[in-house]
Length: 258
Ligand SMILES: O=C(O)[C@@H](O)C(=O)CO
Ligand SMILES: [Mg+2]
Image 1 (tube, rainbow, N blue to C red):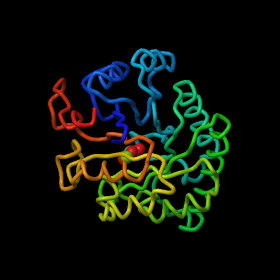
Image 2 (spheres, rainbow, N blue to C red):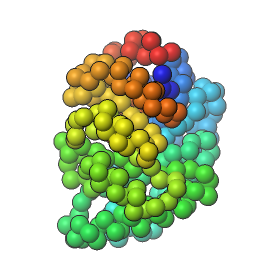
Image 3 (cartoon, protein in one colour):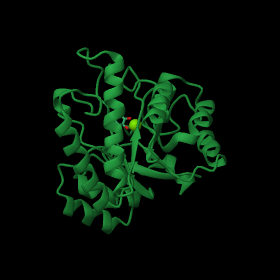
Image 4 (cartoon, rainbow, N blue to C red):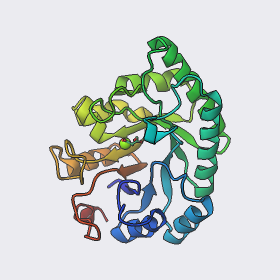
């Protein structure tokens, strides 16, 4: 069965961030991932990670001002310097934490650029990010986000993400395949898992439509996990969901996979 990483930006939010590493281990996860760890001093994060013994398998690069609606910088005009700073900060955190994958978010479609101009900006920025992260043996991931949860997000379909990865043309760029987003965008999950397997470096999972625990929605997640296994995928599945179980309760869905 796949290796499951707890997304500690979504799970165990009743605890201070650094305490979530140990809680993830106690719950039976064998890795962790998170969105934006940058508010916690790096030394504290490294301590928590070391004590838990769990690898950090994915972080996101700083996305710009999230509270003001920013959802990434890679496809945004007039922020060349801020973009490089974000990638360098992500590289510092990822490398200190031993994390080999950074999700670089594009942000929204902007009308001051034509679609083609914004696309070319994104390609050029992702190439920059890939080159900077390659120096520390880290990969760039991009993730298509569904239009209901993230209206106006530039990378809004799997075929588009595939084309972007192809056009960036670096060895260290790949797809973050979030099964929840794929179900909402395209459905046809197993065929899409097969189709995108060659470029997929990381999966994420949540039920659909609720974005809760695996096994609590319209998909047969157990069967999907076995299919991913049969495809000889050796990476991680990040568990990025809004828990239905009360804080402190056992995570029952994980039991068969421990
Ligand atoms: O699916 C998501 O929303 C996340 O994986 C992410 O990185 C952007 O919020
Ligand atoms: Mg995701």
